[in-house]
Image (tube, rainbow, N blue to C red):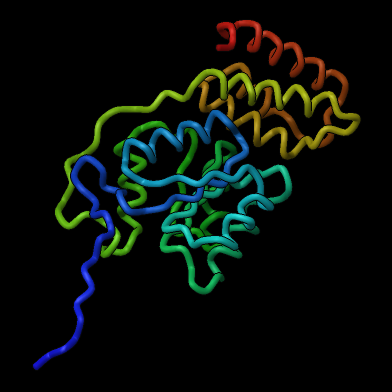
Length: 235
């Protein structure tokens, strides 16, 4: 007689309309606008989301749990996301999937992310539900994914404009510093510009090189001020 006790598995199973059900996604992203888009994508896909806006915040999360998927922006305020990706890749046990993301220098950013140990890469802006789900499902183990082939999801997400306002205001605060972090600011602004499809801001941010001179700071302040003033009143 077999006395082995079979323990039922009560974990939620992915479904056609929620293919990421049961997964926890750690999003390490300093842009409020991009982070809000990720939240909506995870919500529509059935995944739980945990958010961190810096390497330090991400490491606090990682002391408490191991995510199914980690999505890491390469430009973070307290260091390079590449270093965090390398640590995630070397961790035991490792997250099932590690993905890099960036809105700046996409081909180079993808290569750097993969060299650091990322399994995949998502270029910003990330808005299409089908692309988001496909990128993750193509990388997760079969045990985490849905049992049957899934129909392609449709639709895009639109983050709240208040999160875009916060990103613009943060950039203005950085410009007000005596010595603005030019390299970080360039990446941050390129991500905002591409998410908002703002060609003028993208061109200006893309032309930034080393330390910002007075003319560059003045031009950025004027443009960011114009964008803030053009937004609807905050709610």
